[in-house]
Image (cartoon, rainbow, N blue to C red):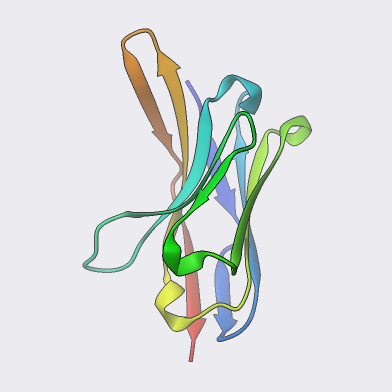
Length: 119
């Protein structure tokens, strides 16, 4: 089992910055990939960024150049640095962890943290 706890959300003005944190209950060295997703009201949950155990990263086109995902293995924590925030970034942000099991991938989710960008 993996418990994920997000923090760092809040209200920020357009152009501002926030850093989200996701603390895992076990060593993230044992987790194949971690990432951030977001869901705005009435929308589906969309991928924002991912980082693999090897450090490889991917980003949604809408956040490239503005958001950076990183990991601190010693703290079992993954971060999402969000700069140049826009109102369309407003959403609940969820941390995700994927562990490859013998039978396939298993996903774990945090409870979510609200990010609101005012215009």
